Image (cartoon, rainbow, N blue to C red):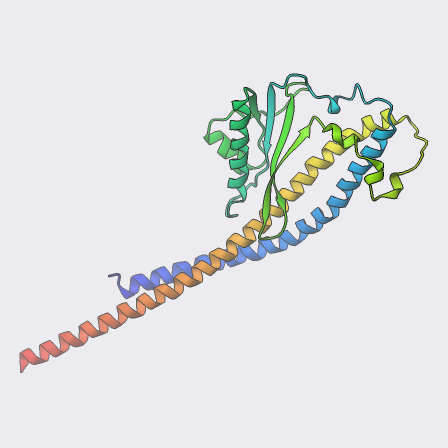
Length: 273
C-alpha cells in the first residue's frame, strides 16, 4: 500500500493539473464566444452568395467555358483537404476528421482514383506525415480533378458534426435552383444585367469558392474551441473525482498506520510487563 506522503504528492499533482484544465476551459470558452459570433454572421452571407449565384446562373444563357463549373469526363486525381487544429487536448475533434479523411481515401482508392493531400492544421499535417502520406503545397490549374474538404461543422459546444464537402468542381445544381421554390423575393423577376450574366458569374464563382472555404475554416475553428472547452471541463471533473478517491485512500492509509502504531505500542507494553 502507498504511504500517506505518496497520496499527498499525487493529490497535489492532480490539483495542479485541475488548475490547468480549468484555465484552459475558460480560455476556450472565451474563444468559442468570438468564433460563434463570426460563424453565425458568416452563415447568412454564404447562403445569400449561393442564392445570388443561382439567380445569375438562371439568367445566363450559357455557363460553358467557366473552369470552376467544368466536371472532368474522367476523374483520376482527387485532392482531400482535412481541416484540423494546431493543438490537441480537444477530445475527438482532430481524430474524427482524420478518420473520415482516411475512410474517404480508402473509398476513392477502391474506385481506382489517385488521392492527393493538402493538410490544414499542424495536427492533420503530423498525422499524414506519420502515415507517410505525401503532402502537396501548391497546385497549378488542372492538376487535380476534384477537391474535397473534410472538417467539423459547429452545432454546439457539445456537438460537432464531421462534414465532407466537394468544393471543386462546383456542383451544377447550384445553378439549377427553381425560383418558385425560393423564399427570397429579392431575386425574382426580370433584371437588366451589366455586364452580361455570364461575365458576372465568372467573377462570382471564385468568390463563392473562397466563401465556402472560409466558412469551413470558421466552422472548424468554432468546433475546435467547443470541443476543447468540453474536453477540459470533463478533465476537471475527472480530476475532482480522482482527488476525492485519493483522499479517501489516504485517510484509510493514515488510519491503518495509526492502528499499526497502536498495536506496536500495546505489544511493547505487554512485553515489558
